[in-house]
Amino acid sequence: MPTSIRVLLSAIVALLAACAAQPPRGAAPSLANDTLAEPVPVVVERYVSPAYPKDELDSLITWPTEDGKTWLIATAKSGHRLVVFDADTGERLREVGGKGSAPGQFLRPNGVAIFGNDLFVTERDNHRVQVLSLPEFKSLGTFGEQQLRSPYGLWLNETAPDELEVYVTDSYMEGPRFDVVPAFDKLNERVRRYRVDLAEDGSFTAKDDGAFGDTSSDAALRMVESIAGDPAQDRLLVADEDMRHLSTLREYTFGGRYTGRSVPRGSFDAEAEGIALWSCSVDSGYWVAVDQLSPLSRFRLFDRKTLEPRGSFTGRTVAQTDGIALHAAATGRFPAGALFAVHDDESVAAFDLRDVVAALNLDPACLH
Image (cartoon, rainbow, N blue to C red):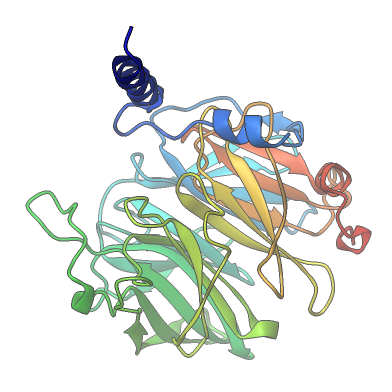
């Protein structure tokens, strides 16, 4: 066979093999290539809760109860409610809310955050943030209806006693199916900030404090959800999930200025999801974020100060993770704390932080 034909056939075979290796449209990327490139430590989940496929669980937050237990609160988007789990066992304790716009009801709840006994919940399709008091889940009111278009994630920063900055990601889209990223000059309101004052009687006032977002082609926030901050570094990390460009974590100041920094390029193979700060001392620790892969999610750690990678791990089961919650305080089952994660939209799982430190050879000071 002539050399030219042999070369052409080899090229065709290689091209066909490459096409066959691509996942179906809409499927999560696989860990296979990562696994071949470098061994990934496995941290075995201490539990994975029973599955509830109709929930479509998304975000997580923990809350210590008055009787010494710890609740793990999850948003259930399709169920239009909140689900409360026992953080130590994964037992489903109760459900809160239901579909609607009245106080205590939800439409596609997504992000959650807690300050003291106040629970903040973003609702994508009610275009608002609802505040509820714990443990009774009594609605205290809402805010943001006049500005928010498609709110997803949120993070709270205490600026003074009972005074908060509330940062909300607003992933508004365009097109007949609301799946088109707006033009760059319309992406300057991807994160909206509110000033919230909490009163002793449980009431609150909220004031819109503007919005921000870079609009350059290289650094614009295209599809946003997870957000978290570090007051010691004046740093907000915002996850951009748009894999058509580059899924990454971008750094902003609390004032809304894009610093030009992000985690190293190529840190994520799939969508960058839930973000949590693991504080080990006043200014040291790790950022934890999810690489939403299948068949196993990959949990990636970055240096708190430099944002350089500090290792990653998978579980044995957890996949397609959206939200995470890092609880560094002791619980009955986890004396050094735990990392909680959503599994495949239908379960919650727990990793013992002692297992994570051992697997990645992290700073033992993180185990308070």
